[in-house]
Length: 235
Image (cartoon, rainbow, N blue to C red; front, side, top):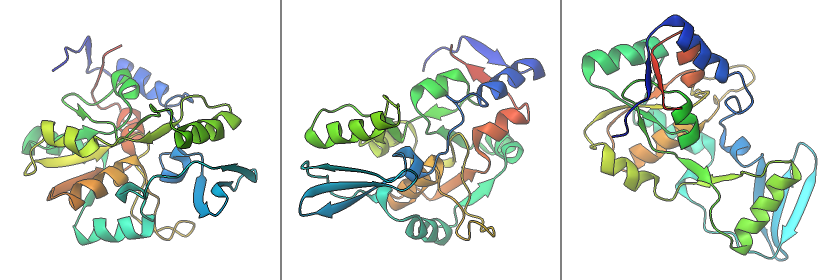
């Protein structure tokens, strides 16, 4: 286990971590759509068709898109599975209590750089999305789509997510999955099916693969630090 360079228990330092979450590098939507710049893909005879609804961008490329992964399933389907498997959302204070009193493990699924910037004490980091690593035609096409928006560090699903989790956390463990904003399974007037996030996608993958005690951090780590709960930083 890495040695933490500092442990934050007082209000002033926790507040500084919360401030980081107000910076653009920490605050961005965690929905699967925004993880790929709201780019939806469609198979066409001419190749791939990226459809970016906010600005109408259309990029065609002859690269072949890999087969659909479980993480790319529609949110409606994911939500039904999460509810069926009784995945419960808990607020930050309840999550801290469960961690201290009931041996819950906080699984932080944000990228490693965000994790090092600030996370709950004892949290385990396994990123569910990572920076795009390969240079296949498909990856180049995705990089081009990200670059169109001035983003040169596009992300992709971490293909080793489950293996890495299994190497660190037993399947019988009680887990609280956390990301930046958290998402929600609760319906609202504007979002009748709630809103997915990296942590909810990760929770979905976990229950599909035999994890029975999976919880979700409502409000994400943004709210954790907003409430001045303890955190550690490795920066």
